[in-house]
Length: 310
Ligand code: 13P
Ligand code: SF4
Image (cartoon, rainbow, N blue to C red):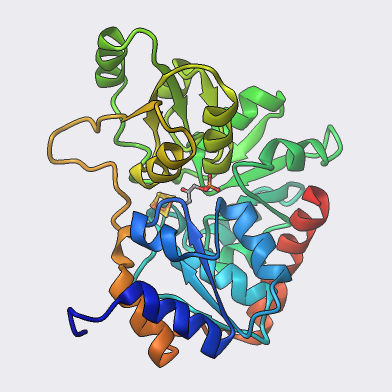
């Protein structure tokens, strides 16, 4: 792409010409967030994807998010700037292995975190996100046994929060597992007034010291209503962009990873760039396509989630 091209202006032009909407997750790079029509967490993004009347949904996020948009809006073209933008958590649950796992618990209801493939969604009864998981679990009658997949950290947190004893699939997010309790504690010693805010995909020991736990939207809203001046943010660094924009004067410190070579950026999310966003809008590819039977099977548990969280 010509370096003299104003990508921001070009993307705005393409939005109008193609009747396209750009949906971005908070973990996208700041430039992408700045051109997006909507920025949100996984629940907000799927609600937007279900209700938009645009012809094209450009999904600045990872594959399972764009796939969820396609499941909900099959008549629309759904574009993902880089088709290789996957998710380590979604990859930790291959559908064939999960099917066998599920067979061991025939009486269990399956609640799956939205960070999973369509194949896992099709094997699930209800989908949840980090912002509605408690509500979804509480909607299930007490006494009904539950399998929770694929995130064992979120699952462990939810067992503690809801008091429900769930069978967990052993998956995790590579970004949220690299935070170091020791390093956060050291940072806290140097910034005693700072509040620790963490995403529930983090390990239990890290969540233990958090002042607030929530989805990306939850974390952002907390910083807007809370009166601390400093925060140690234990999630992917992309969220800091909106936190800083919404809270001028407050300081946000990204929590450090456990070693200097590790990184608290999501390598999958960060595969998308402004240039790739522009190119995918210009050429209308790469596009998400799906087998129709799989789409219908995966849609049911997502619709249940949307009904419960409406
Ligand atoms: P939320 O934005 O729904 O909190 O999800 C976080 C995440 O890891 C997305 O991949
Ligand atoms: Fe997946 Fe973790 Fe990246 Fe989110 S941050 S897309 S859960 S690997």
